[in-house]
Image: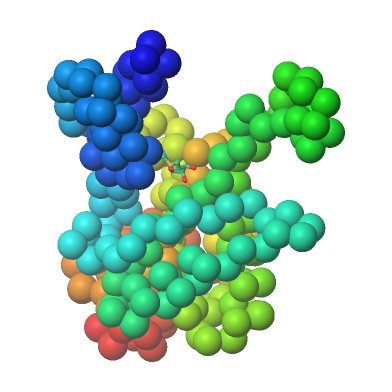
Length: 215
Ligand SMILES: C[S@@+](CC[C@H](N)C(=O)[O-])C[C@H]1O[C@@H](n2cnc3c(N)ncnc32)[C@H](O)[C@@H]1O
């Protein structure tokens, strides 16, 4: 019970009702008859509006896990495709590996943990392009408009950059945390006007807006 209370306490530092983790904690607390008071807070799920895309126009959020040599999951590709078909943007949350044990240490019961790893926007784009290359259903291409966000909310270190997936691939976003947004295939003119502030290559951006969004 103490452990659950600590988990709930820790989870108060983000938006309490936004994800499976939170629902799980609340259900478990209710089962144990622990009284709960929810204090709503900021979350990437709504702070993402800082990139200029309107929250109304986001579809399903996805999480992109690190590929390994023999585990390259791609089920989230279908979610991106569904969102894009409806003209909606996709917020991609990127994998975090902290307190992970190697198979060997796990097998031997050694409490030795691997160095923490945080997926970068560049790694996420590489994985996404590999998946498109395999699936070939045009959910997106290297020319699709996207927005990379790093350390959102930090007064001095926040970075927001918009461009094609290909353009963002070579950008340096610095230390974690990173998120990626794949822009839907419908965009309001106000969204386009806002995003322009985060674009390095304005000519290319205008070209894409004209070509893909007819605005
Ligand atoms: C498992 S999710 C948890 C999100 C958290 N519960 C929340 O609601 O903000 C963690 C992922 O959210 C994204 N994220 C959280 N905070 C962020 C920030 N300040 N800037 C950019 N991405 C962020 C990153 O992709 C990170 O890997």
